[in-house]
Amino acid sequence: MEGQFGWGREEGGWRKGPWTAQEDKLLVEYVRQHGEGRWNSVAKLTGLKRSGKSCRLRWVNYLRPDLKRGKITPQEESVILELHALWGNRWSTIARSLPGRTDNEIKNYWRTHFKKGKPSKNIERARARFLKQRREMQSQLLLQQQQGQDQQQRQRQAGDDHDDGAVTREASSSPAVSLAAQHEEDLQMLQQDMDDLLFQFCCPMASSSCLLPGAAAAASASASEEGSTADHPQLDGGATWGWGTLWNLDDVVDDVDGGACGGWDTSLFPLLQDQGLAFY
DNA sequence: AAAAAATTCAACCGCTTATTT
DNA sequence: AAAATAAGCGGTTGAATTTTT
Image (cartoon, rainbow, N blue to C red; front, side, top):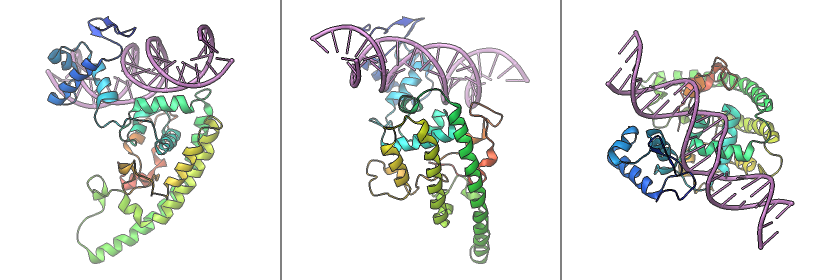
């Protein structure tokens, strides 16, 4: 009852290849009872002949209930493009901004849709140029932001009590946005500029024609338009797809010493760090 | 109609990082 | 403090499916 597909084989005691419905059932039941993790004990407790690694993968990429099935939407696609232009192949980082999508899925999607030709110096160069521009914009914005904060602080001292501003870091349920809201106009302009910039860079490398008719539109639209967000409630919850509110800075800190992505330096994101922006 | 080519995507591998013993 | 085990990551593979010739 196993060799239905070519490689439903056993090797070193572990089954390999595609999962059957029965196997899925066992794994799901295990997780229901014991929670996620301890993947190696799945085999021991359920008799499933799968390695822990295999179990984890199956759960994370396929069985998890919070997974979003169905095709990548144009909105998601544009996010993938934007974030890939920024982070390169850090799929799990990118996936964190796409609830319900797995790194594997995103990786597959990107490779099949946007990878044309070689891994490209072009991309790296485009990204470098992009980041340079970005840094300039941000230091500008930072200035304005600081001025704004000063003013704010003065006001607060006059009126309210405690709270030294460091609180923003993780707790507040309305993170980064509150600050950002103060400068909505600036942010929107900045965002618009960045979107333009980004697409200027990533369109050429993305397969010529068919690629972006929807994505580009969606990206520029998503900045301001909201009405048609029916199928993405959680993505839109108050935050636009702005540079300031999207990602988690923890990821920026690694790789400074010239890792896979050429090692850009963290000072590129002074503003974001200031805001402690962690998201979603 | 059928064969070949291209695409898709679930699952694998090896390696790195984190956690536990 | 170190060794062992588990989790996580990104690249790659290849069977199944779809498209093209």
